[in-house]
Image 1: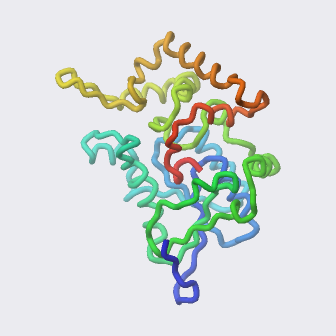
Image 2: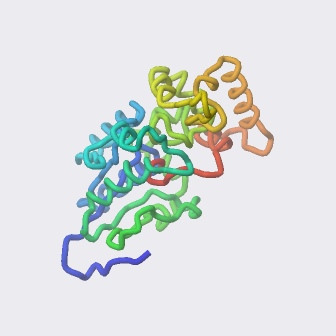
Image 3: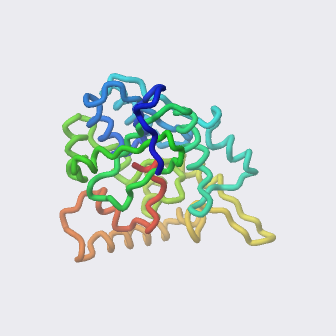
Length: 273
């Protein structure tokens, strides 16, 4: 992308956008003393997991600096959904990422020259890229530059005392509790860990009996269907089978086990890093 000449007059800002995930959190810890003027932001959809908000509060205390919570014109997901006449976002139409993550960040930056610090690791160069096309926003990849990989990120989190976010016990990524990129086993995790949120997610889904059209979060089945005890048992059995397949290590961490079932589309970087 086009970069901006830092020798030009005007403010220069250093901003790290947090997702509530392990990589951006580890990057915030890693960069804290390297760039004291670093700003920390979180684009809040109002639909994050309780564990995410708890984790961000702990990180804020560790950093000793306030995290700016950003919204699109002060609106959360529900207000934007109403404006779109109830049309749910999907992998094909990711309006949630655009309006709840990208636009608030770009508005916060404005026209200032900004170096945006992104937590992509050295062991995932295929993810290198940035969702903003504004020429004044210049991406920086400290983990890639330093050659830091997944084990290093886990070490940084452990040494800080924060550790991994609690939702990693049953979920592989940050983001809205109803994120359509969730795996089936993660929907089961939401059902078992936050049945109230599962019920709310189910309430968003729609079915038109006349046309047969359905708007569901999970591909090819509604959350009502997915929560059937027989279906839950089937999903758990399939997940266990994949986890124990011989081609994978037997000493995998839970976060690695989840990745076995991951879809080919890894989701939106700004939501899940």
